[in-house]
Length: 210
Length: 161
Image 1 (tube, each protein chain N blue to C red):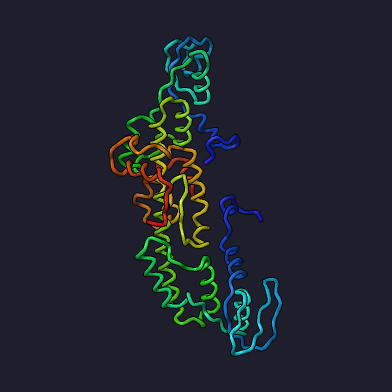
Image 2: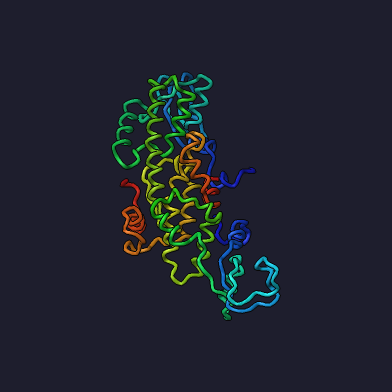
């Protein structure tokens, strides 16, 4: 596919959406009866209402669009759970513990099966709050960037994706510019800010503890 | 961001930035380099030569040139960068400030200070470059962002593309 250079080294959001819907499995309550079905991803079913069945997300969304099932929202996609995560997110320096592809999955489910969620509007606004809190953390990551490496424990796929081009370029520039292992006392001035800059660079930086 | 890639236009342009040089010897027939009407270059003449030429001449086994550090990398600039990295307009100093600075630091024996100020400038300006990339258009264009954008070096401008 002919793409601009800056898109080529990252996946596009629609590609991520595709990966998430093929990878993730949700429970549904079907309103039709059918035996097991064999797909590339495995054997799913049988479908016997009102029993729940586990299916890949793409299939669940497709059945939902045809009004053949109700999606059972995953346990992390509830108001209570998200409220708790938002609290973690704003009180702790770490990224809160959410599924790796939580943004893609939740967007797909809210879009197609919003009526199966309790309070989809609240869930959506909670997700937006969480996303903003996480963006602030990523921004802090930029502030502390150096050329030796960094750990961003718990960051999600979509967030990695949007940071990747910028971070990769910055690492490249920093490595070229060198000066990473300048001892702290060799820094030009005693000003606290520039001093700390070099001190930061010296130890392998761990961003998880911001 | 290619500093020395063969096909990078920016690296060619960075090679062409001018370095203040002083001739230590007479050079007959090359007076045009000075831009005047003189036929020859006299010993002691001060000429701004492009980096690719001045570095070759200065590093050759004959002492053709004495180089001085370009104004863009003077102590005054590095002090300003320490004081406030984001308010220095790198583009006004040199459009290829980082790449040119690296080239100059290759010529210097004691290049620690210059490398530090390059590095310091980049890492402290990075957050504003990041913010511009993320939020450009959402912010009040009259404020700090426009000021900062006007002062961005070519490398920084390409950073978010």
